[in-house]
Length: 127
Image (cartoon, rainbow, N blue to C red; front, top):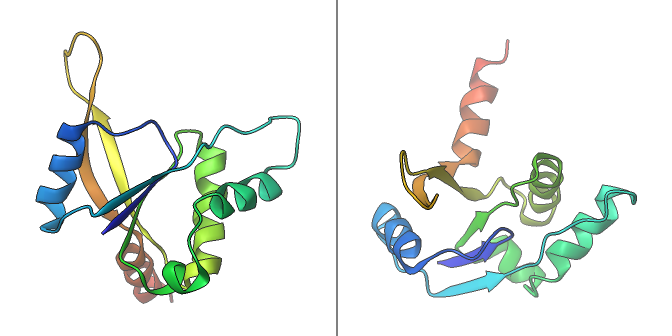
């Protein structure tokens, strides 16, 4: 599995949590800087962000990828659209959550979101 991380670097514990959830090793992590310039159009910035991951078109389409999206909701939304266009399907994404009562604040892996499965289920609900 290749983790493409558009957010804060994940800790060793978070990587281990992911591997346990997936039942597969994270063989490579690609860290992608995802800060945007708010005064500029978002689409081109997100396209450039995805380009910085350095994956080939073949890898986008066929490699086992897991995406940790940026925290900024508009960037994350645009990223999913960009990735669907490149991949031909919705990627699996990491969802983190705050550990209740942790001092200092820390996050744990909540789940791996299967966006493609959610998409297919929604299509079946269409009338």
